[in-house]
Length: 301
Image (cartoon, rainbow, N blue to C red; front, top):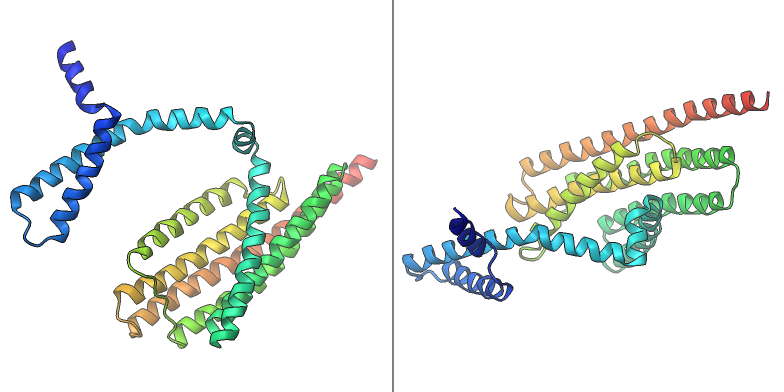
């Protein structure tokens, strides 16, 4: 029994040098099998077997690699702080998102002027509103960092949350314009080669994380952070919509009624969801305002 375990361990956990060679051999064999129409059948089967074995041993090594990487990250002072401090991660996301949205807005305006494109101007408006929303949250967050009163911090946060709720409705107007340009203007989005698959993976990753964060920060213990996650959800939905347009451009019949109908339905669903989210934000902040004022009055008595 021990002998078989030893053999299994050797097969499943070969030396790193051997894994390196297996990976390279697998890539070469698979490239030959898929790209060369004259590839012998026996070579194709060998390439499948070698690549399957290589994938197995690589996956077997992954938990150990993840553990070593995790230990290395936690041993670094800055990485440890980033991984352990939730508020720091959200602030980095907020500030970084603000800079990216401003950069995208400027870039889209310049491209829109150069190409006289309604689509680019609409995307510039969308990114401008996102920039304003993030700027409001950054500004209020900076004020709250120097505010010693919990009541004042919460009230300032709720005010920012309310402003973002109204701006979310304005953002929805920009998204509606984008949807109309796609549906009625027959706008298409084309990505080069296999880049569309990477963009699809990233879009679905963003949507998954946005849903998780929306549930996690549904309650408004920190209204500013809750608003950040709602902005992330809106942004992820727009990414899914633009991805669908790109996928239909790449694989569907460009300009067909079926494509327009599919884009229209998805666009309407995105707009409705964001509208409902904005309404719930405004309704929720109204309830929180009343509760906070009532609690503050009781505290003074």
